[in-house]
Length: 252
Length: 357
Image (tube, rainbow over all chains, first blue to last red; front, top):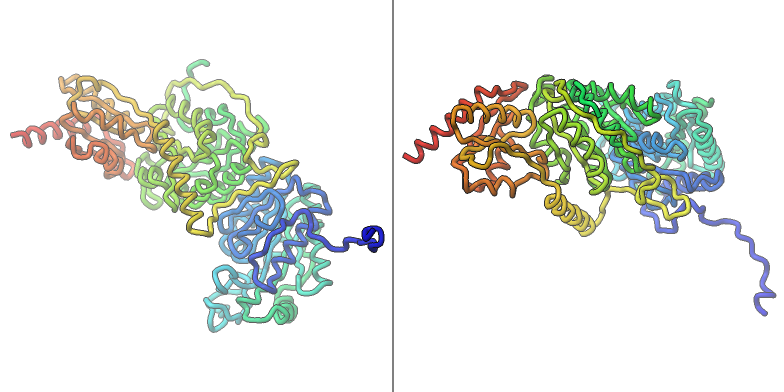
């Protein structure tokens, strides 16, 4: 009798099928969770979960394979684009993506990333740029800002001795093999929605076999920035975005 | 199949292809480059994957990906290039995926030179990358043996889901010899492998990772590998011998050095000396019981290598002091001559007499 009287319930928010139902190891306020969810929503919406293979990096996202409900491999540090190349060449019908942080992609793995892109591999790379090494405890990244204090640049990044940060979206956009290279941010709902659109377009470009697709996501690291989650979102807006302008650097 | 005159590098490449190689990734380095060049032409002809990587690091991690995808996959390189592959080899070993590596050793250390050498026995046989894993290592001494071992290597790699290394050198790789190539095998489908990544269609997702965060999990994995290695050690030892029945003196060498030792043995026999030759083909697992079994009949053993003494340690371990073991080596890219090995045999016999007196 109670059933008959119960109001009709509509499910308005649920876990995407492409995410697993487990606790996360990410710190509170870290935007990896947002990025994971966006990628999973896109995989669901494109109905490609059963032919997607992900490649995880070394860094905070090393356990990404625990969270995505798709086939996954965990690569050595920086080598995800090479490993993804091997997977994709054997299974050209699969949708293969790498998920990499700034140390992994822009420092130790820059050769693998640039060459996979230069070959125009039909891969999608989600690049998480939070301007710091998270997992090892806050060292300088290739994307740390000039003057940014980290545990390995305690007086701030001195560009005279440590060089200037790398802008990967701009760099990759110069390569003929790259079909899509854009930078988005995860610091507020509007930008999160725009990030999702870019991720979806990147996967579509892979499916259409148009070349290498790359989405850089400006992200937070409250723990190693020494800021609250809320302050971190502001730091992205006020510090990261001026140095790393959001935009489409290449769209074919 | 007809016998043909074929170069070592080309023979290995063609044997791999006929064994059902799905995907090859490599980087040019002398003296293995003809292997890559042969596959650059042949693999696309057959609609298979060939890719020249940006580096040996790239190549080995492409192999890692292809292996996780269930492909029969291979790379090849030479000493300095194999050093760069060490990282990937360790990850592959930690992920229980099969692959074949051809290492055409050259003079070292450093950039060294492009001449034949066996200076990377320790590097390959004892692991190569970090973490104490064991690859199966097979060392051919003729082009025909290189073909046969390469043809068998993929089945071995898949059966045990392990790394198989064909360890050879610039001499055999560059040499042309008459040899017979095996028939072309039907290829299996990578997707049919019950462990491979292909997309979780109608099944639970699969994951390959080499991370074991808890020490207990890490130890359990390492112990599992150790038990697997016991099985491989029991089943996969290979060696050959010649003139061993009445031998009192033993020459031991692998690959090219084993062949030089064979020539020296024949010269010694012609001079009336009771010399036999024993050549391990599997350097890992080492045929220790087979070598040890020869101890009672031997008065001395001479190990010949193209280095300053590496495998000799395993020979000494096998004999455990029961047989005096001496060493003769040339290194840095110099190949020993049978005449100088024969002189070393004479020295071994003279020394033994002095000890007896």
